[in-house]
Length: 249
Image (cartoon, rainbow, N blue to C red; front, side, top):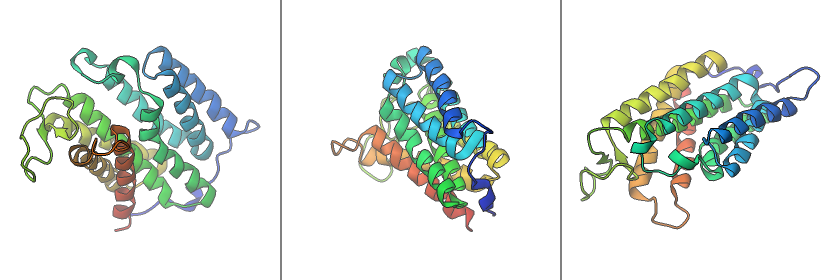
């Protein structure tokens, strides 16, 4: 499997207007719209402007588009049948911590890859986005499952087999299929827009989702700093790493 050539990582040109300015204007427009739709809180919108500006400035339309695809699809699914879902973001919108938990790793990879002309960073970027998408789709669609979720560690530890919907580490077949579909959407789009290898990015997304569930069941809440947002951040690192490792085989 091939990794994109270094030329795909070159700084973006947007004509006479600096790409940073273009990215800021576009991100501000998207974030304000999302705030009005209550997809984001006020601080979440500010964080989204920062993430979107940096990704567009360093990666242009293809990388920014992949980010918007994740955010748009995830936001729609979050609001879909929200009355049946227990989490606060289904009403108030995602906070800055949640935006950064899902987008900070991809942002750093986008900026680093452009500054250092690192071809692997494009694959890692796509893997991080795929992991965030897979995890969010699994959560939002899995919450609607008619079958109670099963703790992912139930077979390894003496814990109850089934848990209540929304429990960290709880998985359903419906959620797992949604994760595979979400990761496939990102992998396919990234393959077209960024010339990234299809299978490694898809696998990175699914791996990130599984890692999120494992950490949610085993360590989330065990320490003050080990929050759901921290787990999501680690999962995106896992997705990015998995995508890069598999792309080198």
